Image (tube, rainbow over all chains, first blue to last red; front, side):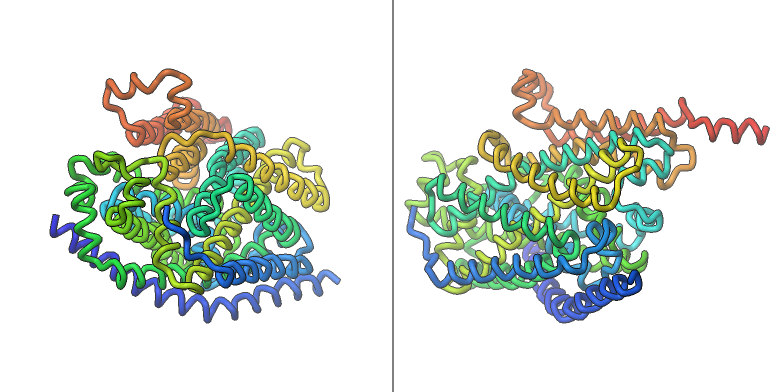
Length: 49
Length: 514
């Protein structure tokens, strides 16, 4: 049981740290992606006109 | 029940945040010009935004609620669910299994692929119907879980007030989803991802500080014994359950339509792979972090006499029907003012975000794969958009009714797994053979989809109605074994049906060669 408890502690720790890093990276880059998505949709509209 | 610490400041944070979400959703309506923009955002999705929207829609309030419930009722051993989901999503990202060929086929939905691959419009209609019905049934109890969360977090227990809050939220979702389609879904998912992730990470750190890891381990040992740590051990989940979770992990990222929609909306197949590889962590945390909060709730409830009387029987067993409320009640006790509002806003936005994705998904499937093919494809873009919007309202109405009267007799997660299995067991077999086996035939696909519907037998209500409960108990057949048998049956019938009844074009090809 101790081995399992240690295993889950490691998994949980890695998950917490890894996810915090992912959140920072996605939040910063996601804003740029939104701008580019809206620009692409706008251009598509202008191309139709 | 101790009073919630939810204050007017928290309420204000929630209200401002929800209104902001709806405002953004409505604003992007100006970018929607056709069904392609509405359903797959013009296929303009890039990696980081893709991750946010994938995790944002898959990490919803409902996921948090059923995962926390699993942590409460299963202890640390429940972490295997997230681990299995993370590993399988990573494998899908590396190999491109199912999702890359689907993106290459440039389909918007999975039933559309059925028609493309098997040249059968009827198969697409049937597949679309099964997918939408299973999906709508699957989200049938979302409102119930949402109401439990609001009640636990805010301390508002009046059912009438809760019903009005839930109805108001559904109406807000309808407004922005019906107007902005996938573009508004993506942007609101992004906002929700940011706020909920921050709230969840903060909550986990606070639980570690206030309750302590050692205390959590001791409580799980007292309540669950060794089974609270070892998922394969006696009195724990068991091997068949773990295998079922591995399969569900694979399905939820590669076959479940709401996740596949993200792959279909991606800019190209490289983005699809990257999206899945990086989202694997998201698929893992969506179970593990809420489960950890559920374990925190277990330790908190076990130590507090008032909560103990509500969540445990005098003999020390967990009261199943109250277990879903444990996590929000716990959070309402330990989180400070402001953080409670932030997490509440994130969770409620997540609730709306899951609804927008699912409502849009099932309404789109009904229009694109059932109604339009029935009309012989002669349905204008304007008519499709109009019907989709009407269906969004109709499905939301159904959810309000279903949530109120369906008596949930199993853990929410298990209900959702079984209701989803009605579609995905058959769909998995059809996609597996269709994408990777040249000889896959139309008859095999029909047999696989039909046999997949037998997964409905896993619902406790259906078992009770058909008198199957005692039959299954006498033979020690668990729900998970039953579901795995359905998967095996669908795969066998897909391959056997294809070999015994090959498509005419394949037969004539062989004859020509001979």
